Length: 142
Image 1 (cartoon, one colour):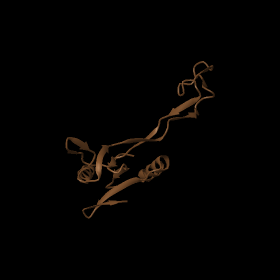
Image 2 (tube, rainbow, N blue to C red):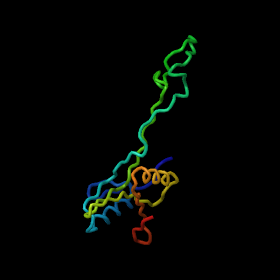
Image 3 (cartoon, rainbow, N blue to C red):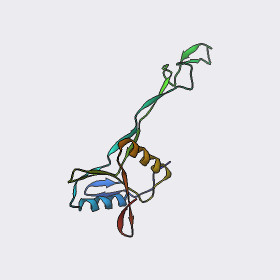
Image 4 (spheres, one colour):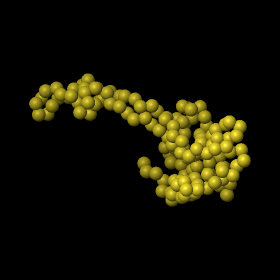
């Protein structure tokens, strides 16, 4: 599934994925209780893991040329295939003067996949993933 088509926008020499993100950044910079804003913090949702290779028998396959058992090219003879970590990059981490932190994603539109990402993030980190949208000129939490 591809990304939503948004126009990149530059503010303070920083390139944002959308004009909406840039606008929210400017809004948050003006808030007196905001100490620092981290751009695009990344989180690991699922660590890398291994699965049994379904193309071989304990790392061996039968050669089509010789009929002999040879090392499986898919798993390099280990019998296990590595799956990459699943990561999520939020739009912002907002650090407040009182020591609290919020992870924020600015949405104009949320695809079906985002609800799963949000749930996994909240389960793993025990923290609400804040989603903000602009409605009638105001920033609203969803």
